[in-house]
Length: 180
Ligand code: ZN
Image (cartoon, rainbow, N blue to C red):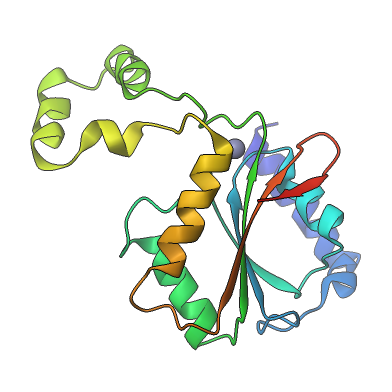
């Protein structure tokens, strides 16, 4: 059975068994908190569990590395919605040790693109339009990355002064948080 069929079959049972009842929540976060974190699979359930969060408590925005790659991109837009539409008062930027974005290199990804059949000319065309290497590169140090992201949010022209912003690093094995 393919993955999608397996998921749809499980989903049918989930709804029939009314298992959604224990997850009932409002779209307005009960804790007035937004979290920006990494998409790492180890954090999927560990992060909310280790912070004592349940469904409906917070807004969680995730991407590779938990970074903001553009001041007017989708992460900042999500934070705008969090603050101005959903009443968020605090933001946690949570990086983690052993992150896949640490030391990620754009030339490594480029090689894999070429092997997957993406043409050099296509890559060159994109390189002429954007800062390709910066876009596809990770960070060297997670503490530095989180600090920079916190500063990016703090210094953003649309973030009101009352919003509190904190940087934290999670141990992906134990869930321990180290505050920056
Ligand atoms: Zn990560």
